[in-house]
Length: 121
Image (tube, rainbow, N blue to C red):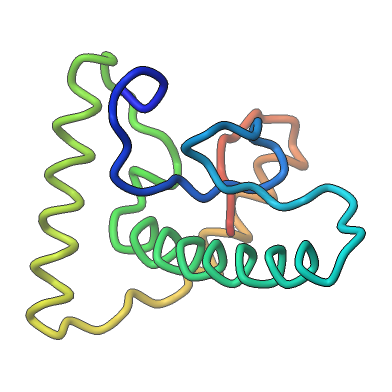
């Protein structure tokens, strides 16, 4: 839709994403003060999103560790998790704590040669 339709906003991405009309990615080698200021603002906006994603994944660890569902069922699960997360935020629920024991367990599995899809960020 973003490629072909009218746009009402932008996506913010890191340098791994291609620059498109609808996306804001950092300037690779900023040469002017305006480009440096743009990068600072873009990174600041992206950090807010990264923090929110981290809280979201801690609240719903299945999203952090990978859903083991058919693709057709993945989107409804993610949408339901977003709705539940928004309800928790509106209700003033506390942020979920970091799970250091889980991170240590995952690291031991990796050291033992298991492939584990886990991103602690």
